Image (cartoon, rainbow over all chains, first blue to last red; front, top):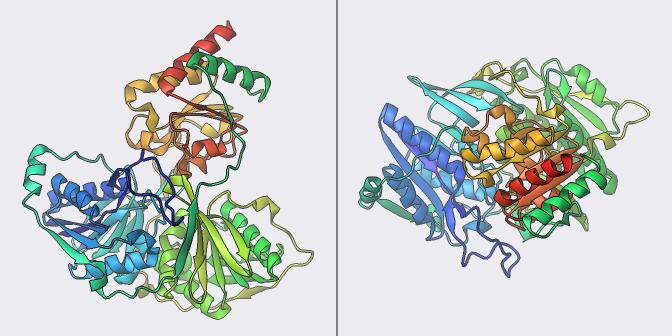
Length: 256
Length: 327
């Protein structure tokens, strides 16, 4: 089975975020980046499918030069090769342009199954997988918690809201977006890291993909949101803060 | 502006977020003297269309077909693209549900259009609509507008608009049946019946006090610290998704969009950053206390009381304080 995983590199969870001068993105200097966590689950699922059914795993990521680091991490975990769609202004693309670019790169590979996380931890549009399917004329299923591969079809468990699930049968090739928590992701072993150094990462400039750059939406500005509620911050040593909080909960909020 | 709100129904009843999307549609239509229509889609849903016709709308469009009985992305995309071709809306609004996430981007892209998803607010600027959505897990907000001609597509986050503010009309509006052509061969996915994994052992919605733990709890060995505090407060222990994904607490203790939605009198969030998926499940709580080491954590956006500090110092301090003052 030829498995392709779309992986995004996003600011690290604990990275302090500051708005860039342009007001259209965050300041990228001095912060760390990591593999988008939901995509990590998709990668793990691809590696498990390969272990079970054979084939290869291709890690595809779009972004500036630094995105290569995330592809390398995927290779160290067991992906066979990487594709880097290079674009320094990647953050300015709208969801449809992102998907069109990825689709153009994916089309060259003709994978049997395309996996990606349910959403990214930065922009969080949650559209990439569904759009890829539409653009590649493939069926899709989202928020997947389990994958069974049969002869020419897949049976996948999709998470619905409020603790409900549903099995869906679909033919492959297909696109699946993976729900967080579907598996326990592996760590790269030293052996894996060594082996990854010999693995290939092909770089494609996004402009060379021949994708229209006509946007359907425009990110006007990003900013720190206004508070919906006025938060009363309680200060002091842990003991003092605890005493003040209990006092307030008893006599001000009256919930204890 | 011609506005179309696509409602979502399960077993003939609209979900709460659909009413919120309708209320947003009403507000928008009132502000720019627009035309507002609601779409009811499924099979055997005429009664629901009739019910929605009581709301202050210009039209209810009923899209029924045997192949729309069970939701499929292909069925809904095909049927709704035909309804859109007939209704010619400028703006199509959806509630941002798991089902909408599954097909709305496909529908928009099938028409060569983009969608702005999970919006929390909008603004009208000289007749132009600007949507506000969250980014970086709620740590920043973004203003996003459409480029090019409509129809434009947008989905609205649960709780962003007031469904109980939905205005009713004195007389019922017309229900218009929209005929759609669907062929079973167009539907590539075959859904089975929805099911619940396990019977929920704990009904978090009934707990008056909830102590919630997030990533900040760091290791399963630390869970008993929070459990002891919950017990002392006479409440239940719950968690954000990553904690349940790790298996540190069972799935039935998860609060958020994929878990339970709660509104206790006290919600104590320990080491929870406040990702949108969690916040939508708890922001209705009467009093929210957040303890987090990151002063910029979005959980403080919804907190009544906040302490910026180390939960491993503050949980014992709170436990001690409660034990001391109880005695």
